[in-house]
Length: 247
Image 1 (spheres, rainbow, N blue to C red):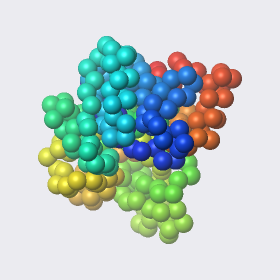
Image 2 (image 1 turned 30 degrees about the vertical axis):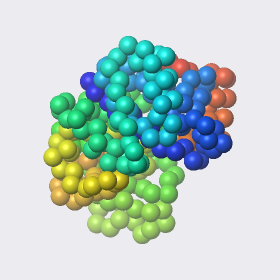
Image 3 (image 1 turned 90 degrees about the horizontal axis):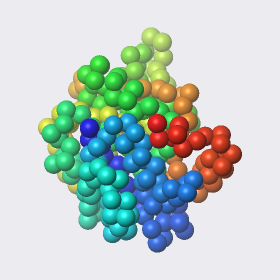
Image 4 (image 1 turned 45 degrees about the vertical axis):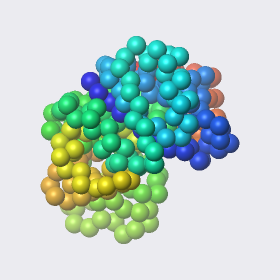
């Protein structure tokens, strides 16, 4: 089972913590964000991981060597220039494309979602991509129909997407996704680009991009210091536990 961790960003929202280290090595609950994600992937059965890096890549390489790559196969995809989510995945095609599907996980996301549930839905529904989503506030909603298939992207405050009998589902993408390797035959974009832009184009062409809403699970984007502090307190008080976050 193969996975990719998106970790190339500068982590500007986490400054000053990221002025001398990559976002992936910022700690919460006594562990770097990267370690939390790797442990969750391993617990879910993944044994081959590629991580895209750009900001202080040598520090991530050193960290992984100290951990003996967590006793699995881990490779780094070095980006001389930031390639975005789509460009980063495309650059890692050599590592990912020999599997029928793979999972992509943002490095700054912690959650109690069961990855194997997303994988099962992806396989059973034969989706091109399966996105972990929630009903929560966001600046950019994704619009899904009553079969949970992606239709459009909508900015907060825009007119409700028309034409759906029961109304649209406006969901926020949570930075975890299962993707069919068929995408590598479909990506024509050069350089830096967004995978969400690709999904919107492919959905318009009839491909299945499904949003799986799991609003009952714990999820946090740890891209801000305030959120880091909140999660630290939740771990200290046992409101959430390490076991639930990596299971």
